[in-house]
Length: 438
Image 1 (cartoon, helix red, strand yellow):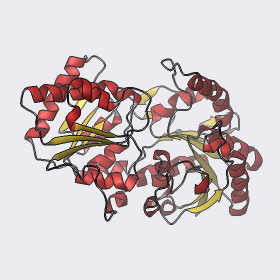
Image 2 (image 1 turned 90 degrees about the horizontal axis):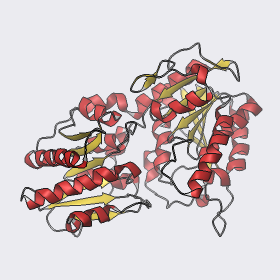
Image 3 (image 1 turned 180 degrees about the vertical axis):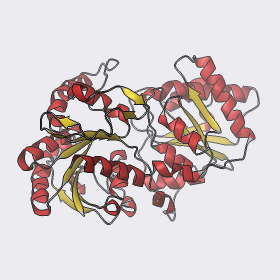
Image 4 (image 1 turned 90 degrees about the vertical axis):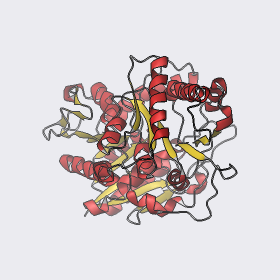
């Protein structure tokens, strides 16, 4: 049994999307021959609302150490928990490494500042480390006018090369999330994409990081899903639509994305047209839950513009993960509204299909989510977007898919086809990559 140290400042009961990454993969590491140790922050120093049910879906295999953090000041100057607990996590990580013969360190980011810890710990202990990109650190901010965002990217361009300089592994939720990292920092190891999710260098065991003269590799693996999550049924669950009369719930759960606005506008316009044509089912109610405190135009504003605000409800507050899974399983239709970006990989796709309710979805044609839906025969009500489509064409395609859903009660996905996208499979991919560099 080898030992892996996972550094991630959030852990249960903090119900953040990022926590799912180390949880889902970590749940299966011991089964694959790796004992997972975790260094994280004590709950009382986190700002997120605790979710007491969340712990039910964490494996008992994790050996967890929790540290204190500096409190949030008033006025709030530094909120990032990775900064507030940086030195405490570093100190505890060194202790865990020295007392438990850690073989590898794996650090999902964000918090992006945690990426620097890999380099620091390597310099002190020579334990190889990997950085996992849940989100890109350096990104295109051309359309962002916020000085704060511009400053964060200036800092990112300085810190990322320092963090990755002596890395042994770069991983991510998909290859495009980290491809530019290799291109910028390891140009001699970079080869353009040959398929949607792999680089020529992926399985080349001869690659070396010239800064350490030690093996280097990378791997893209999705969040995946743990089928055990869907077995947890919560008692006395209050439904968001509990006061509605007899109706059919079409449910969207999760953040409203910056590049989803076009889809939302066309979706509501399509429904407005169907209502005028008397082709819409007036018993349907559209619910958008946990959309977040995004700064852009509200979903409800799009609904008002289209004249369908009477059937649209939005709750922006983040909701407990297990609550969402239970809500999905009780909906008439699950909506998955993706992004106009090609590389967007919606982890919620798996949860939506596994809800065993029909899925209506819209994605970029080249998104890996489209491939997933097609492979498991869950693409009956899928809209595939391309950059060449104008708003009228997008709206027409959405109308056609909605009409198909309204006319069909058939829903028979091939759930076994999802197995290769499970978190167990992602854990296996990570373990194989780590073992290539040891």
